[in-house]
Every structure is written in structure tokens, then in C-alpha cells.
Length: 266
Ligand SMILES: [Zn+2]
Image 1 (cartoon, rainbow, N blue to C red):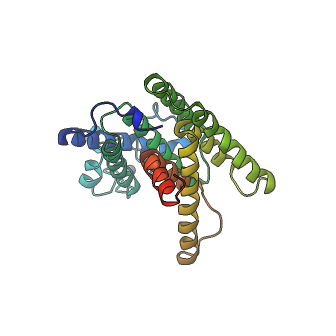
Image 2 (cartoon, protein in one colour):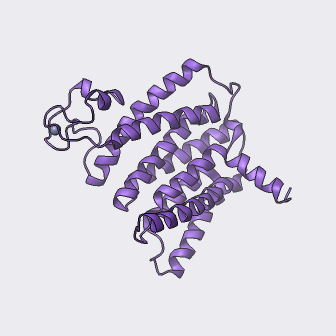
């Protein structure tokens, strides 16, 4: 689900990219809040922002994305405790991802949907890497995005119904078999829920591609980590699934067409 969402405009002027980057960095600031608070079951809206060490409430000038971290030199103004560089990194990466999505999708109805999808995957990836849990509310959020994308797509260009229906179904069957044959040991419960929700968003072809990419990238990086950093065999699959689904959302059709051409299937 696909180029059909791209409307008339395909390339955006430079000013739009700059605004998009600033917007993405601000969203990244919110994603940081999600990353730290959702695993602790804290509210992501009600509790005011505060220092993790001394609990000091933060002034507005300590909350400007990217700049505050540089301005405060990575330390709390009150207690001088070190602020994790993760704040800065997440904000920067989100800004860059937003620009990338705009570059690939152009000014289209699909762009905000993909911003939200990739933001959710990013939060899930970081939380899973830290805690080995995939928070269910974010998976539900992706499912809702998927439903909206189907509605938008259906209203513009009718997507093949089987590509929509069999996206989530294929993920249910695939993960169901893995869980059945491994007695539930091989795969965390969060992974298959994430894959089903992503199946709704991406459709059959792209979600399958995303899963394959996630498995390949995950095995390569995990083996490297086991060799280089002597990490244990426990694998947080969420980050790799997220990368696979994200790549598939951006370049899925191109990759599938390339594969079909190279293998002579078409
Ligand atoms: Zn402090």
C-alpha cells in the first residue's frame, strides 16, 4: 500500500524539509517521554517533565529539543547529574527519520501515517531493547494507524482486498506455528502482536518483506553482538522487526519489484 497514496506533489521545497526536521525533533522529544515512562506505567501527559535524579521540575528553556542538551552540556541544572545522551540521540534520529519519510513519500496523505508508524516502531524498538517488553498500547496504536491507512487507501485507489486481509492473517499463522512448535519459548508474545498490527498497516506483501528483513538484520547483528560484546543469547526481536517494517514501509514496493525482476519471476 503504496504509491497510490502519493497525490500530485512528489517533491517538497527546502523550507518544508526544515520545518519537517524541527517538527520531527519535537516529536522525538515526546518519544523520549514515552520511552522512559511507558515501561514504568507513568502517565505520558499528566506528570510534568522532571530531572530523573533530583526530581527538579524543568523550565521551558531546559525542554527545548536538541538545544537544551547542548546548552546544559548534558547535565541537570539543579543537581549536575549527567543527562543520558539518549534524549539527544532519539530527538536527532526522529528529526532525520521524518525528513527521510518526506523525501520518500513526498507531500502525500501517506506521509503523516508513515511518520506515526515509524515513530511507534522506534519507541517499541528502544523499549524492547531496554526492557525485553513490547508495550501493548503502542501495538494497538499501530493497529489503529493500519485501519486508517486502509480507509484512506480504499477511498483513493482500491487496494487488492487480499493484500489487506492476508497481511495480519499471514502473521498470525507464521507466529502461531513458531510458538506452537517451540512450546512458546522461541518468541515473545509482544513480537507476534506487533507483527499482526504491522500486517494491518503494510498489507501482505510488505509485511512479509519486513519480517524477512527483520530476521536477516536481527540474526546478523545479534551474532556480531554475541561475538564482539560476548552478549548472551537472549534476543530482543522488537528493534529488528521495527527496522524491517520501517524499511518495508519506505521502499517495500521497490524492493519487491527488484526481487521479482532479479529472480526472473516476472
Ligand atoms: Zn537534577
